[in-house]
Length: 565
Image (cartoon, rainbow, N blue to C red; front, side, top):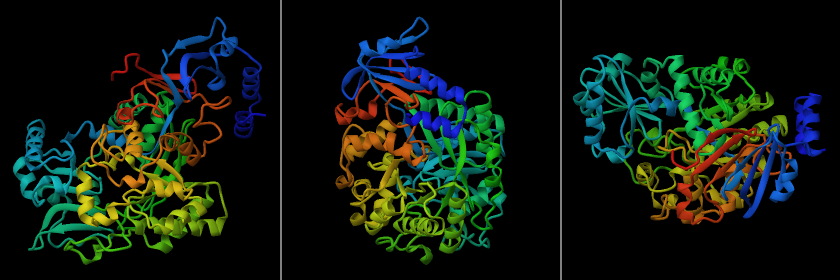
């Protein structure tokens, strides 16, 4: 009995599905054959029936499964690979941001001012201007309300930073949120202030919620359109499965609407935020309603727990050692912010683990990573091994002792390879933590050497592109796409390790290793056809890989014959 047959029997229990699979193995005609492709460096064909790979081999062998109804596609010598996974992405956020007042990452004060002036001229007075993404190092001056007030005096302005953990707002937005010199910092957040105690307009972590909660939300129709745009873009890059790392109820509704309309093609795990109101009690009501939104390819079976912030000039990532060489405006941030008390976190993770839910932690600093592992260990002791591979996300810094510990606990390290090379956020991080710690920035090789399960997550739209081929190249090169200075070169991995992270490793982390992540008979036909082999192409060109075809369950969901988007 094949792996696929066992899976169909155990999950579906529908005899006709088993008979379809058995018939395919017995040599029934294929629905689709991809001819003249390369798999593992050998010219081969792939036959698909009822969404399942039923044959891989030389053309003359696979030809036996052809019939008059079989669709045959000559892929012209291109490369066939398993579909790619992105284990940390924000599609709805990205789609909405596409419609907002944006400026390039790394923009200076003048660029931001001009972008705001243009957006203000296009909107009625009094309407909100929402946009981003700024970073303190690039703005080139102290952040305050004055610049935003001058550019858009008649509008409340809300600008997200490059990490999505801080806001920069103008006076009108502060006024509408009721924030003034007397407003206390909320638990887990910081209102930045000038020397005279007045808010500067910069709001960190939970303090950002004071403004976010009064911004008019997008309509359900806008959410569906934004999500649909993002999903199509992801298909064009060969992403067939992903984890939405922060799916609130409006996102759950949008996914369910697309699924019901037959327009959700990818396989999606959605992570519902827990304890999102950091200044109040945890609200599990959306978690309790999760199965109302579950669909065939949409599984809201993941919980998102924010343990800290970011290791930039915000100094909100929880670190084991103090931040380097800086005069901090808040003594409580000398080692960052650990946002959830350990005892409360342990109890929550034990409960979610017992319920069969996956937990994805936001843990950028090594202190937060340790807190996540402590919670996973508490769950393992309480529940035994439940089969859920809880994921510690970002992992910008990890204490060496915690690498082997994660492997022993069955924890997953989810790294963000799209921010390894020198982009604007790196300068902030280097300044905050110092050169010594930057030598082990995102220690993916150390994690693999420790036998931990390692997967990639783009964190789009925190980063400007969801292109997984950027991540695959920079995993190996530790350089900007196409070449440039290395960043922590000791953490470079092999090409095969990089490809495995996007395929078989991620399928295993998602609980789909029996049906996704490998090109083998009996596996589901989630695969892509690309114009070069990432295992053999010049490494500096991998980021420019073009996807010709994307298939999910044997259905062609994206096609681009000339490779141009």
